[in-house]
Structure formats: C-alpha cells, structure tokens
Length: 253
Image (cartoon, rainbow, N blue to C red):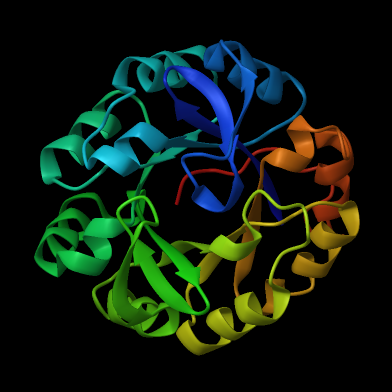
C-alpha cells in the first residue's frame, strides 16, 4: 500500500488545516519545494499536493510553486485544489504533474469530468470529500447534496478508476481514519481508493492496509509526519506487505 506525504499550499507556505477550516491553520514550512525534496529523499514514491488557496477561490492560485515542485523531484506528483476547468487540468499536466485531482467539478459539472476523463484517462482522479457521508465541495464549505458512495458510483460509470476519499471530520485531527466508512466506500464502488484524513499512528496505517483486498491502494499522511508522530520510513514499512516489500517504484497507470 502506498503511503503518500501531503504538501498543502496556502499563501506560498506548507500548512495543515484542522478539518479544512481556514481559521485553523498550522504552518510547517516556508519553502514547499524544499519540503518536497525532503519527502523524496526520505523515500516517498508519490507526493500529494493541494492548492488550498485554489480550493477556496475556485481557481489555481499556487501554479508556480506546483511547477517548481514537479520540476524539483523525480517522483510523480498528484495535485488537487481549484481544478474546475479543462484548461487548468491541461496546464498542470503540461507542467509535469502526473495526476490531477478533481473534486468540486466532479460533483457539480459531470460534463467537464467526462471531457477530462476522455482526454486524460487515468491521469484524472476524483476527490470525494465527505462529512457524515455527504459530499462537501468548494473548499469543503458547501454541501453537494449527494452521498460519497453515490458520487463514487456515478463517476465510476463515467470511466473514473481512482478516487481520493477524505473523511473531513478526521482530517488534521490525528484521531485515526474512518476505517469503517472507507471500507464501505471501497466495497460499494469498486474503485481504486486512496484514503485521507485522520492518520495519527502506525497502527492507523496498518488498519487501512487491511482494506487493500477491497481496492484501497494508498493513504495520504500529513500532520502526523509533520508533527513527528512517526517517520516516513516507518510509515512506508507499515504500509508494505510481502508482495510489495522492497519495491519503491510505482509506475503511472
């Protein structure tokens, strides 16, 4: 199972928000490119970058930092936050980003999602962010009126194969992921799933790893790494199994 460090961008800095709230920010670095290089040096095989400013504004806001991160590391980078039109997705992929994560637009603009999947295939990932099982959009500040499972099934029928599934109530809390909800989502949708939100211990990673038979292929870890709850090397070891132990390369789909 992949363990993917998160780099959340706000105001040009590397931050974490508690449950996605703008007023609950912790700054972990003023040089996101250096942070990306450090995670790569520590063994990361993927990086997860979120333009928080873009998620709130509805348009990409940290383009140059994202470009610099993609150029600075050899490992693939997936990016989300503010990707709400075809031009932005095309631009990011042209900058060297491996995958784009479409959240709000996936829930609110199915025609756009269909065009993106038609053009870019599995380089398009859908971000499904849930609060009490219901999808939240526009920087998690609005409700979409749809369950996460319903959205997962809908985008799967459109050709999407991979989603990032986030439990908003757990995000940034270190209280542990919502394993039950994640398992239910995996089983109900049949999608490849990267879990996000709440990881605070190595046992949390091991608990999620048990969901790999259901389609879970990775977990995004942020605050626990930045707070020193464990090292990335320890997290990678916890996420390995007999089939992937020692394998560090995870090619693009």
